[in-house]
Length: 293
Image (tube, rainbow, N blue to C red; front, side, top):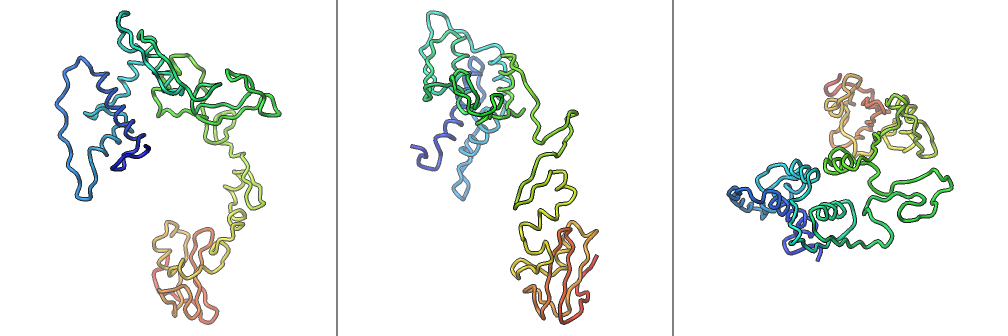
C-alpha cells in the first residue's frame, strides 16, 4: 500500500519513523527528556504532529529538534557500539544502494551477521549508475568513443549531503569540483556552451550580449512591437509605474484609452524587449493620461 488512510505515504512514514528510531538508538543510555506535548489539530484538519515529523526528517532533526548529522558523523567515524561475540544479530538489509551498503558496513563492523538483498542481479549502487565499459558489471562499451562515459544518476554530490561527504573522505576517494557552467582554466565562467533554439545557434556569451534575435524567434507578442491581445495588456502607464525598468521606460497613454482593454479608439499598448512601454493610435495622437517617467 503506497498511501495509508489519512494521506501519509509509505515513504514519508518511513522517513519519519526512521529518523525517530535512529535518534533513539543514538541516544540510548542517556536519560531521555520528557516528550514534547502533542500539537493540536488545526481547524482545517491539518495534523501538526505529522507535519513536524516530516519536517524533522527533512531537516535531519530528532524529536527535540536537535541536529542528528553530528551524531551520524560520529557513528560513521567510530562505528556502532560493538556487540559481544556471543550476541551477534542476524540482520537483513533491503537494497544495495548507498544507504543499504553503509548500513551493512556499519553493522558488519559491529559484529553482526548481515545479508544484503538487491533486485539488480549484476550491480550494486542503487541510483548511482555510470554508463561505461567494464566495472563490476562487466559492461560492454556503450559509446563509440572508448573514453566517453555518462552519469545516469548522482552526477554530482552537493555539500548538502554531509554524511556522503564523510564517507568519501573515509574511503579516501578522489573528488573533483563540479561547476554548473562551463569554466576556463582559472575556474571562471567562460559561457562557451551552445544555445540551439528555433534554428538559431549561438554561444551563451553571444546571447548575453545580444538576446534580441533569439527572443524574437519565439514570436511572442510585445517583443517585436506586435500589439498585445487585450487580456494580456494593461494601460502602459500602469505597467511602467510598477516596472523595475522605470529608469529606461517611457510611458504615454491615448486620450481615448479604456482601462478595460488595450484597444479603444483604437489604441494599442506594446512592450519592447528592453521593457519600454508605449501607446499608439492610428487616429489620435498620444497624450499623457497617467504618470510618466
